[in-house]
Amino acid sequence: MSASTTLTLQDKVAPEQILSLLKTIDSEAYICSRYLHFTYEGEERMLYYNIDTRYLSLSYGLDSIAIMKLIAKEFGGWLTENDCDDDKEPYHIEKSTGVITTIR
Image (tube, rainbow, N blue to C red):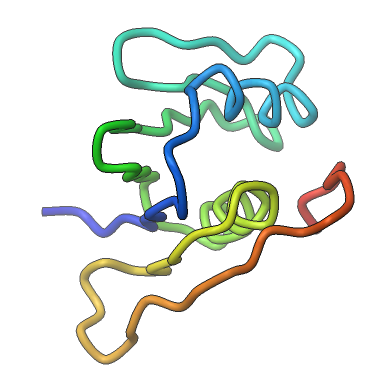
């Protein structure tokens, strides 16, 4: 099993809402099946989502943490930076009141 960065959203969020946020970093982002496809810094990424459980998953990496924090700041949720690291607990990120337009 490979490591992933996961996010459990506070509330149910339509995939189109997440897509709209991802389009701020890649205007050509799209949805196919249960994946949001987008490019970040030249790398093609696939974000898995399960709206019934409010669960999102992205292959682990420093950029994946930044991307998931962007989503969490917009919608609120519990972030697990590396789901294979048993020493780190998920932590909560509150929704921001303003519009988030950048990852870093």
